[in-house]
Length: 373
Image (cartoon, rainbow, N blue to C red; front, side):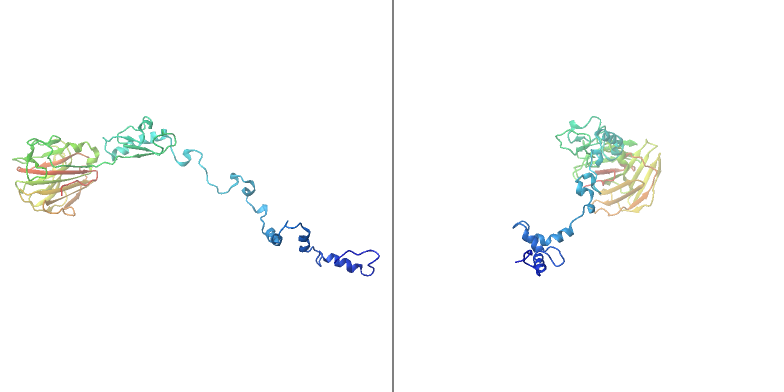
């Protein structure tokens, strides 16, 4: 067992004894042996595996100088590329109720051009909507993003929606009194006899009949459409008709205005038994045709259907026998800017004969006119 040299007894060998003693815990280069350090520790205080990996762990440690500041401070403000946390509702684009009040008022005119003027108004919770936020019946619904049981507050988001509306109209004259002029239709230009008459073969059991003995500019417009204002400027009409004399025209008209002698509006479509045409009145002056004409075939006392449309400066029409399918394309079409304002919409009777109308449909503001079949 290694020991330290003993004075007086190890003469001549004391150096060898000392070296043997030191080599028990030192390497040849003087460094401590790892086994000697472990042996000196209390049992179980530092596992051999921990000591074996200590050098690797120390080599892989992070140096404080290499860390971001937030790693040692723990402060959110020391983060880099951090998102902005909204502090108020305006930071996310919300507007106050007072501001929304002003914006809605500024856009009333725009909404009036796109919605009907006589619509009901509905709110998410009517009692909570601030006074003055709605100043027109054209604003039809206000939906709050908050709980409907809670009052509106600054920062609440509101969605303003137009009421879905149908700008299509139809009548088969069955609801009108027989022997009388339809009560919500008005004669225009030259007076004439327009009466509702019983007809078992008609769609609704009645027809609108116009009887005349001479040529004149006679028109009848549907008052119901006048309530739609500027929406009438772009319109489509479709109607079923028959004439006692095949050469007599039974026409529709749109954008109508003026008095007798100063008539204004677009009209058409059958000019006689063989021609479909588009025409106009401007201040009493008639132009016929405007654009090209097309060939058709009209038979007396036989039902036919006419569809006409005016949109912007485009005016078009088609005519077909009621027993046939509707033509897929317009038979005549032209552009004209003489009459641009919205006006009366209805039927025109010029020649002297009997004309019957089974039904009449109208679509406004780009809508397709409804029909039977």
